[in-house]
Length: 130
Image 1 (cartoon, rainbow, N blue to C red):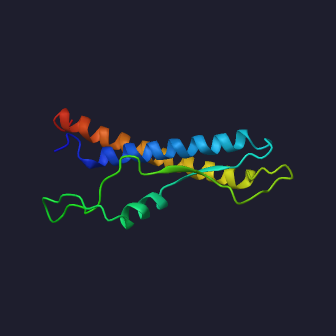
Image 2 (image 1 turned 180 degrees about the horizontal axis):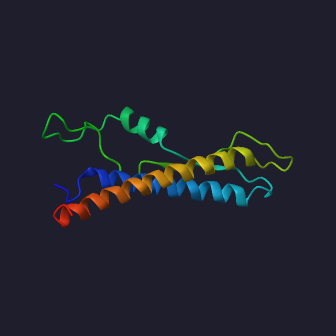
Image 3 (image 1 turned 90 degrees about the horizontal axis):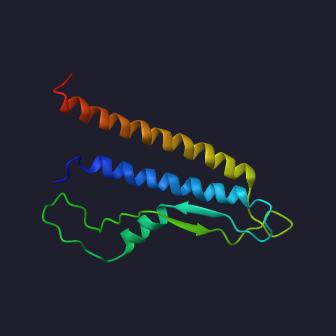
């Protein structure tokens, strides 16, 4: 049994994903004028569908356990190869990147607020409800 349960671990993995997404967006924006640069993206859906499609069966000691392996790194960074927006072979779309950056910042802040709430609840419990 985990000391904090699975919620904090899930929030930690989500924060790692949001940080990786932010790094990819920042790299894309930094290379907006670099000839032949191909934009990077961090994806989660592909990793999940790959895991669900695989025939790996985890040992289940309880009927409520999930039947697939839990991968601690549930995202991956991919390069978008098939497009080209600039005359120099670059495929970074500044409007799309800025929209994704704003969305990712909101997502990250929501995760930080949630994890702060979890730790606040633990602190209240440790103080005996005060």
